[in-house]
Image (cartoon, rainbow, N blue to C red; front, side, top):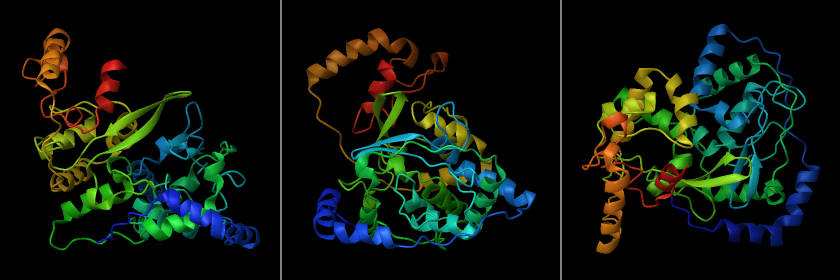
Length: 368
């Protein structure tokens, strides 16, 4: 079990900057990059096909394909409290992509968060989850990425603060634990497959786990709901609630395993419909997976107990005001019971979105 770390990223960054900054920058200037032979390796058709499937499980295309850009060429912007970071080009272009990388280079990036040239990667690239992925699966992903069309494209530079990669050594020391997934012998093979996908390639916790001030996942609240920033149009950023996906009352307690599997695979079920940032996850990743893998993920998620809470105390006059709005604007489709039904309107009763601590996603759905 990981120990809980509560150190503040801000404090850590200031300490490093004041005490170790000059030394770290000097190290960067003098450090020789890790050698990497040119790729040029012939991969089997089976390895490429398996790698394509695994890349879908990891949803690589959503994060590495900007709007109207070439697949996997990077340039997708991610808003953080410290500025904007842009995804990298992972096509096999030798100058701007990963054409010169080896299998071991990709293993090091996914398992340790270190690029082929020795530079540290930001955990916006979810290596804290990918570290659980097996060597064989990383090698298959490498085979697939080396088979796609190379694209000569250099993404924009990150915000100034996010160019200080030397600080990531301290971040990793505080909050990163490397290691492959270890099956739980007390659980079924289906449960273990689901755990491997959810915790590893699927990196569900990246969005659905709350984070500390240092932007590290709070591991003892894994998958109990988080917040994400999502660009909906150029220059327009909205906060979204990544809901609790454990089996707590405010999460998936009322969902059956079959309902959850249908939602993950189709984007709609008797319990919910997809929206916002989850659309890309459903379309580009989960819809591409086999029914067996979706079922395994559902079995694992439904096994997580989560955290119960009573919810906020809402004044009666506010409840009454909301009731009149609901009756006037919502009831016709969602029904008086909130269980939905007409015109395939999703249910609101028991909805993880409606029950979330933070109403950001619910507000976005209503307004936009």
